[in-house]
Image 1 (cartoon, rainbow, N blue to C red):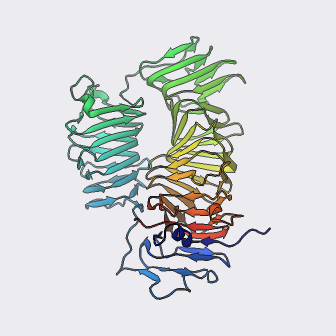
Image 2 (image 1 turned 90 degrees about the vertical axis):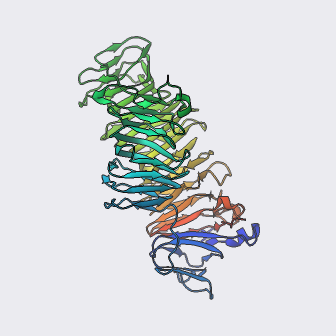
Length: 588
């Protein structure tokens, strides 16, 4: 039987489920965007419609498939035009770059800000609702400026350096206003006492306090969740620079440590040139492994870091940890700083290294080859620091049952088969910051869950398929994007009849950038968030679908809370096969 070439985006289906309540929501940031239909296809958009975009834009209600353009088949009142005199509203999730001219007041509302280089803020940056600054490793100097986080607003910062924090450089509107940190380094220039608002640390971050004090008083708060907040007093010496101190009266009211979160500073100890022959090794302070001083694991050993750090300071390619044949090194509660996987040498086929709960692997920012598969237990993190891992035939990461692995700011090349895998459905792979998977053949995710963390960018590129075969749901959190790009294919093929396994929060985004989305007749469905199309070669395929239950669907036709925004960023959508149902509804 020939593949069905008829694509039907049927608002009538939603109308049948909820008469008079149909809404189509589209965002066209460019007039160079379009929907292209194969011959014989029909595309119907029912009013009322909410359209957002910029410059000149015309939307025609009934699209003529034969003409393959936004024209023909409309009646008076069916065309909506936005131009300079009638500007379209700006979509809340519009992405912008922070320009070089930061000497005038700026207001950002529900926006994502990306830094392409270091910037100096010389005026006030007002944050309204929920905004994100993705630093890409760059610096924002606020010495002569101010960040104002207004009432109930949140500012997410990731992979960013902030310089010049002083009393006048930060302001919170009320106690709910919050600054959230993921991989952020803050340099203080003066003492700061907060009396309202909060700082929430959700991934390891550092505050360079020097001799200054950061104090949380009255209705202000500091929360550290499942990670370390480091502070560095430098030559001034440790004076419990983040306050109140544990012994102070207000400590429990103002500072919260959740899920193993910790506030700590380094103290300095050298570790290396040792042969470890004991069963358990406990670290009590920062340790350093230096050039020419390898650690030899002569007996199976558990290395308990006690939430401390080993810094790998050697710049040589010589091994730093040698595991003798038949021995296992288990690492837990330890941060491996400036680490490289080739620092570990397994001297026998039965030598092993296991990473257990609260292990943080922070790679030096460079390129590595990995030809060993490592298993992670509990909650672990791999911080790439914008370096690259290239998988060999035997390279990979496995996540044990009831465990999670968070990968941050890393590019992984030559991914295929199941080289990043969950060992059962209770395991989770999480992506934070900016993570790129470069496929060299089809990749299969067959068990467990995927999380794209808040404000994260997870992209899959190259001309192969990401085959989603797990029966478990995955989620794209607020401000995060999962993007299929550069010829890649997302193939939705779960083993169960569940349409809703890729979920988004309200501000999550699934994006095609010259990519293809294919669904089996399970009929993939998006509810909430944004479905984005970037550039001109994007395709939807739903082969074999002949009923609404088998169709690709946007919205559920029942609840306006499950509406999806379709955003065109100079993008074209090519509908090629099967059924596509647009089923957003108006709020009651």
